[in-house]
Length: 457
Image (cartoon, rainbow, N blue to C red; front, side):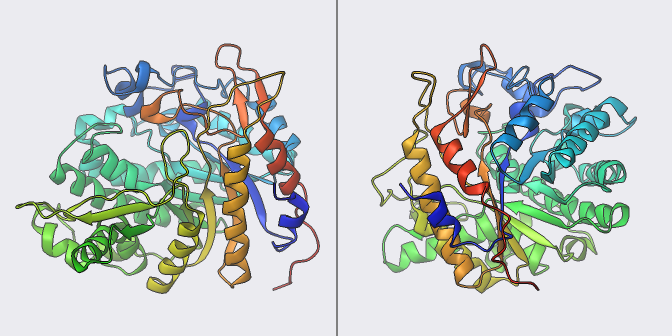
């Protein structure tokens, strides 16, 4: 086991260690204080969509246990908390009247973090679109981008004086492809045209959101959290290498290119441009606004091979087998070196600002034995990936912080409650929290920061 003291010596003293959660995954209280349903409330209650028909009605009951959970974060020694704000609490119908009780909750959350010396990294959209907006088409409708702009402004006018940082979106890959093309996440569409509409309108919403944030709270650093895929070819053959390049454009380029270069990938547009929604004049300039930082969520690599079948739709790939033998309980290949090569490739391709690893972690489902949770494989996963992060910092990449996913076990979307990613174990019957072995180790590391070996500048 890597000694936290030894690992800490490899990071600058102002490196930020935090934990991350998302509103729908932990808050519960789905009908409390004016909140109306999100697309995930509806999706969870449809048979066959979520394991065991689990839902977010109670989750970790964080809404009612806020102070105790903030005490828990403080007790673990971490200095930053990345959380998301539930749009259906602020604007229950997505547009229309503001729900003050929803804003009051996030006031208490931000103030509670401040009182405990914990930096606040808010995410405005972590997939819980107000269900009412589906009547207009949800993310397939351009109007949703403007609804998001208003929502962003309202939140920042209320909280912007106290937030340390804000992200517009979390993992738009999931809320676009996984939700509108693959049908695995809400709203469960399986349609390329719908997915392409969601893609552009999400990107547009990001740009409009940046504009609103900068106007309402110009001192708050604004970023975007992307689950960029580390993509490898299934072989060294030319067909698989070409498939890898197409996969990069489809899974990464459609977000990175418009945000950081001001256009969609040419090969992607050549293949699918006729099915894209209208890209109005000025859209790409809006999407291409400069950011103060960006977040990378990384768990596992993607391996692809060429799909030779006639009529295969871009990116025309099939999954290639894993290379590493080790897997987490959710079945994901463990490959820390892919995190390093991904960061290197993205900085080689794009002019990117400061970076935070905004999610990284592992699903292991150990329970409590003799009052403790011995999740050594999760601890090892963290140690190996943090070692890569230390290497990246040492090589000069502007990596400023790391957020472990997740603070506590929670509602894992389509997997329901059967997959546990937490540093803290949650007994869903009693809501008792138990810090796991990995959580104690991570807290020992995080508790060593900040300290005095960083350079002024």
